[in-house]
Length: 105
Image 1 (cartoon, rainbow, N blue to C red):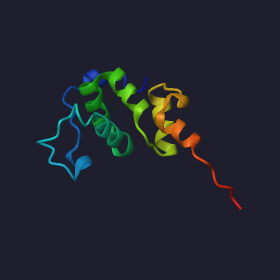
Image 2 (cartoon, helix red, strand yellow; image 1 turned 60 degrees about the vertical axis):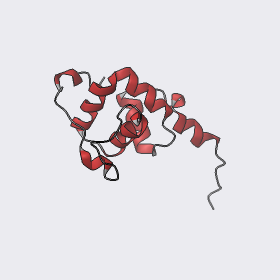
Image 3 (spheres, rainbow, N blue to C red; image 1 turned 120 degrees about the vertical axis):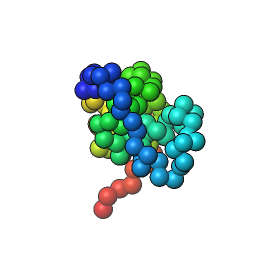
């Protein structure tokens, strides 16, 4: 796995700027786990990824990724590759497949 050395980065912190609309001193990091992981996937840097891996563990991050309702195609491909998840396991992929596609003219 790409982030296998995450335990060497114990001091990594999630940047406050990822949560501009929240008071980060009052965030319940466990209750908002899905939002935190989604924001890091969409806008995070290496330290942000190390921080969520240290906070939630690899299995916790992978299971949460599977339940995220929406990721764009680039982020979906990224998490599948980096976390070794099949796209069919992702809720965001199965949701996208079940929607009616419009014809391109």
